Amino acid sequence: MSLATNDSFAGVVDTGTPRGVVLGRVARHLALFLSIIAVWEASSAFGLVDSLILPRPSAIVVALWDMLFVRGNAWYHMGITLWEALAGFVIGSVVGILLAVAAGLSETFRRYISPYVIVLQVIPRIALAPIIIAWLGFGTSPKIAIGALICFFPPFINTLTGLINIDEDAHEMFRSIGAKKSQIFFSLMLPSAMPIIMAGLKAAISLALIGAIVGEFISAGEGMGVLMQRYSFALNMAASFAVLVMLTVVGYLLFMAMEKVDDHLVYWRNDARMAAMSRKRAKAWRTR
Image (cartoon, rainbow, N blue to C red; front, side, top):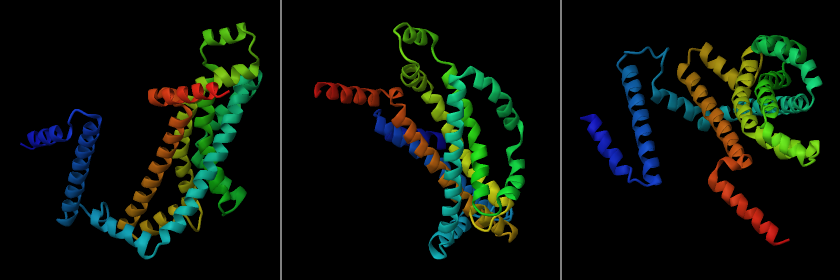
C-alpha cells in the first residue's frame, strides 16, 4: 500500500518536465529522511536505544539551538576550525600542484622527487600530528601544518597524472606546428588535466577539515574538535552530535563550493556553459 502511495505521489510531482523530476526526487529523499528521523526519535523515546549511544534528534536540535543562538559559542570555535582547514587546504594544494607541475614538465625532477613523495604517502600522516605539534607548539600553526600535509597528496597525484597522460596525437600535432613549450602547457596539458586536478582539490577540501579536527583533538584550547571532546567527556551526547552535525554541514558547503569552482573552470564539460562561452568569445572577436 505504501509503495503504491509513494508511486502515485511521485507521479503527481513528476510531470515529465525537469522541474517535476527534481521535485519528485526531493520529495522522495525528504520522505525517507523524515521516516528515519521519526523511527530514531521513537526508538530513543521508548528506551529501545540508549541515549548515551544515540541521543534523540529533538535533543540534538535543542543542543544546536543552544550552541548557535543562546550561548553562541559555536560560531567562535567554528571560525577557528574553518580558518585552520582553509589555510591548510590552500598551502597543501598550492605546494602539491606546483611540485606536480614541475614533475610533469621535467622527467629528471620527477625521478628525484618520486621516492620522497612515496615515502610521505605511505607514512600514516595522522601519526605525524603529535610530532608536528611538538615542533610548532600549541597554536593554530600545527593544525594548519597537519591540514596542509593531508591536503598535499590528492592535488599532487591528480595534477601529475593529468599532466603526463595527455593525448599523444594532440601533443604531436602541437609539436608539428612548432608550438612552444609554454603554449603546449597552457593550451593542451593544463586544460586536459583540469578535470582531474579539480577532482583532487575536491578531495583535499574534505580532508582539510579532518586535519584541523585531528589537530584539535590532540592539543588545542579552541575549535570544534575541542567542543566535541569537551561534550563527549561530559557524556553530553546530544551536544556532541550537534557539533558533528555542524561539521557535516560545513564540510558539505566546502565541497559544494569546490563543485561551483569546478563548474566555472572546467566549463567545457557542460554543454550550456560551453555554448555560452562560445557566444561570449564570438562576440569579443566581432567587437575587435
